[in-house]
Length: 444
Ligand SMILES: NC(=O)c1ccc[n+]([C@@H]2O[C@H](COP(=O)([O-])OP(=O)(O)OC[C@H]3O[C@@H](n4cnc5c(N)ncnc54)[C@H](O)[C@@H]3O)[C@@H](O)[C@H]2O)c1
Image (tube, rainbow, N blue to C red; front, side, top):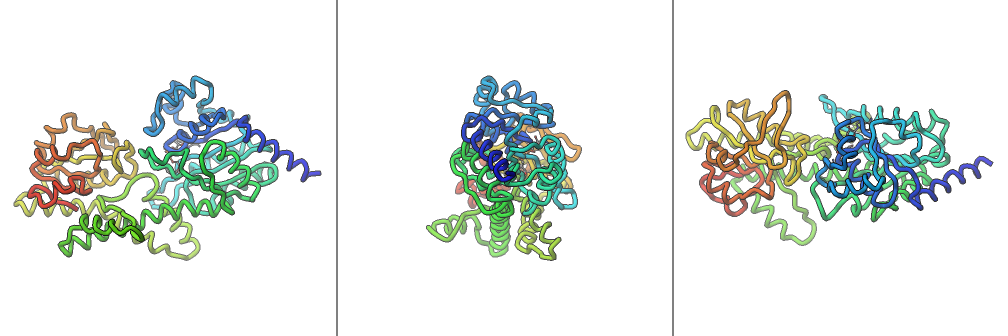
């Protein structure tokens, strides 16, 4: 009898998902959550977004987008059509059939995972769990989180059985902010459930809104997939950053070497060195894995080494700037430095973990007076300091003793920067061939 009832629960949910009549709720409306809300709403679901951040709720209610990848017109249209609602009130979960969790997973100051957001959102959701719900965790985390943390609180404590009376899965978000060819809609979505039935239900839901769903055998496989992807990037960035240091010692142009190696049509993938790595994923996610492995008495050596090399890059940049001043018989102390680009990568407004913050801090520690310009980030509030992007870029370039290119935004006119700056430190090879062998340019 119980089996029949459970089967009815599953079939009823599958039908609601297939006909897109299921009430969808997204918990956490940031870089990951808001695009997901829009993807589900565009597929025809009515979607409620819940977030404690009042500013985000008010913005969505007014149809205003605060995420670069979500066009305001699209959001406004969906809000007006009643397809998207936003609230800070968790009682909205009472009517939810399908819930996606997109809360932050940062690191603590000690470098250990900060699971407090996952823990608190799980407690909030647990109060409203009922039979016939599907829950998908999207926040990047260590393998085992869905089963060890979410399953007991959402399932066991509510007398719900995963795969029978409710469905629980992990699906990593792969969004690459600022990218237009691969979006939330068309980037294949890996999904792994606590049981095969959980994978089936979660996959059915996501397949309504996203182009390609890739089911895997377990939640742990899905969790680990994300960490493999991000560790792959982190380690390769660590490798290419070390290659930059090696080439520097050997007096070889690393940028030319990379361009030449990239002509190989197979077996090589291009990664670029730089002033350090930033963003909410690459510098952080692999550390979730190494933390988990430490508890199992295993050292994730590649992660630790890459992290060490990448973390040290802002220091390398500052040392090279100091050398450039010395070579010109000048002193970094007392000089005025203009940093170009503060975002962690080109053409986006995301400052999280950006190496620009470290580069500016280290330059100031050496006694330089530092200003910055970023067309996407008008103000930086960090470590108790508030900085404003310089209003007149050309004037600031002419006035600076050194211009440091930290982020190679595509809208900068690099020829004009070269023409007007007395000294440029180019940490991204943004100047390309025009900067090569130029007496006023020093490259990483
Ligand atoms: N940003 C990316 O490019 C990216 C890419 C892939 C994966 N991820 C992962 O996705 C997750 C979310 O990242 P993000 O960039 O969207 O973070 P974010 O900080 O932009 O957004 C998270 C949102 O969750 C909200 N929140 C906090 N506690 C909450 C709660 N209890 N209930 C509901 N909402 C709550 C916050 O107010 C915030 O609006 C992280 O685990 C991150 O590692 C991010």
